[in-house]
Amino acid sequence: MITINENYPELLDDSQILQLRGFCFSEANINGEIKIIFQKGIGITLTKKIIDLYKNIIFKKRQGYIKDTIGNLTIYMQFFDYKENNKMVLTYIDKIENDMNYNELYQLSLRLYNCMKANKARTEIAHFCERIIEIPKARGIVGIFVIDKAGFLYFSKINKNRPKMADNNFQIAGFISAILIYSQDFIAREEYGEKLEDIDLGGYHMFLKTKNNLIFAYIIDTDNHTGNLKRYMQLVMEEFIDKYYFSHVVKFNGDLSPFHIFEQVIDQYFEI
Image 1 (cartoon, rainbow, N blue to C red):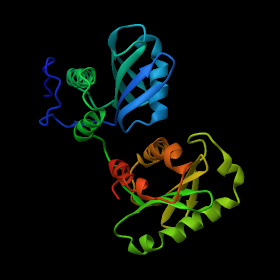
Image 2 (tube, rainbow, N blue to C red):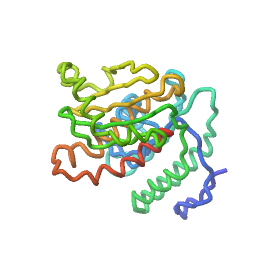
Image 3 (cartoon, rainbow, N blue to C red):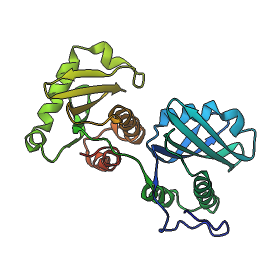
């Protein structure tokens, strides 16, 4: 059981692990702007859509909660007044057949909200959320590549049991770029997730997604993968663009070191 003392908004280390399909802690205003404090298993696009769907309820009340279902998922949202026209919104999702303990979710939401009101560092709050929120990882990824349309490799991670592939990751990046040179219409598309190219490589499949002239390539073991792979592919693309596009890709100066820590995001979603 998660416990809370409302007069002592510290982040305690003995908190129970919550196993969910996704969680997002965000600050939203009435104009539709959202600042993500922490997210795991819920993409930025989906978070915005969910908050927009329920914004009339969220911004009408001082605080409250929403429980609803979308498709095969249950959504629980807790919201609180934070600043003028701003709300703290905590969103939890899981499969309908998995019962969420709403008392525990409320207590966790209240603890995090109190920590924000007490001006606790957002990085500390995010680290706490990272420790206690657990999502099921996807299996079956052999390699992940983030490339620009000219074939320059920003980031890659390859299964440790594929050393030959790891030794040739730059050549693979060039190969992927060459494949798409003949698909200029596809590369130019700007929508999230509307195009998913699936290339059969025998025992493997290569899935390609693009956004902002970036190519996200995933090599999948055809015979040994889990069903949450495609959803996580979308999340990885969104998080990479959110973290790096304007700060490092647009202003790229040849330094690849900022991209190295993106491995932590990959490890959240995939067993690789």
